[in-house]
Length: 105
Ligand SMILES: [Zn+2]
Image (tube, rainbow, N blue to C red; front, side):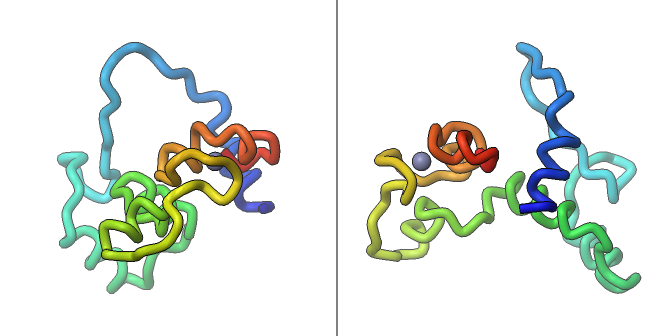
């Protein structure tokens, strides 16, 4: 929770605009993701900031949400454990009204 609150503090001043979002991978000069750049950082001692890994997982939609588990043939309940909406990455991080009350979403 401490790390989550630190992350929220860092991103709360980000202003959103009407332009399309654009991802920039800082490990490549081109700004485009490559497995090679991840492999290189791993060989050099690994990523020191675990939050960067979390952001990467969010970006690539690799969080273990129910939506992702169902894609992997999981047969559990699809609804968010906090409300009755489908549990997706965006729901958990941005939309879940219950999670937002706890400063999680
Ligand atoms: Zn929810």
